[in-house]
Picture 1 (cartoon, rainbow, N blue to C red):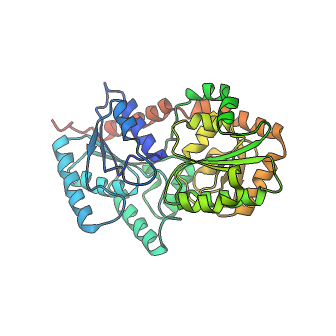
Picture 2 (tube, rainbow, N blue to C red):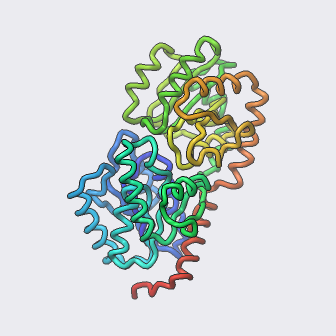
Length: 385
């Protein structure tokens, strides 16, 4: 089988795909990982992928931005690659790789085609005209897909509302995380806070993610500016990198050392355990892997009510949900959480109790493999041999 994705950068879709390949039962599934070059300011995970013993088969022109001639060449190359590989299953990930990969797989005669959108590009990414073009493309590709994996029930409804596929094609398989590092991270909470320069008794509000418009971190900065006077004990940190890094840095400058830009970090469990509140101000979000990371650390969240986030965050129980693109609402939620350490502790405990048993990597891969087995049984491919 083959997994196909555009780029192995730091992000939930990429980590989901990598861990799926890494944890496949080798006795049942021989998996190849096909990816384009890891371009972008978000940072690459390719060193981690290779260190885990996963080989990356490079597709050099499989790039995120549309380019008709280049994309046509990639389509042909993928078709040829799938024919040579004689794959029983092609599983594509994200929009661009999903469209080219599924068309190529159909042309190559691959018996089973599976796609995971990892969210959608219908809202917040492009102009309305371009977004509509993507909807058309997804409708076309869905007719060539045996199963579409959504990360949350809300993701299914968003796609069906756009006329993409039939309900019978969809499966919900939640993304997973490695929960093991979080016990140590919680134990080291005070040491991590000290290393961040967080004064004793300070309220540490943080965010982790790609610093791209779709993640909404500009609203986090605006909320921090609104809270600065009302919560003099508050400190703010933001880990990640992207096209908005410098704009966020400039806007946060009035907060001085109360707002830290941490850049790319490899110690996400430690950061999550150090936060008193994790902010997830996304404009569009398929699920939000960061929500699971916060939950595993026992940290409540203030998050946007978009995409699959309400399927993960129990509003008022594991965090607070607010309207997207609303810095005032986000500031109000943070002020509410700041007012009660006891409530934050209860929410954090509820989030950890929800995440740790349910959202493991092993459970995710087990569910994906069960879907493969179901499709193999239904279609009974001749294994190309």
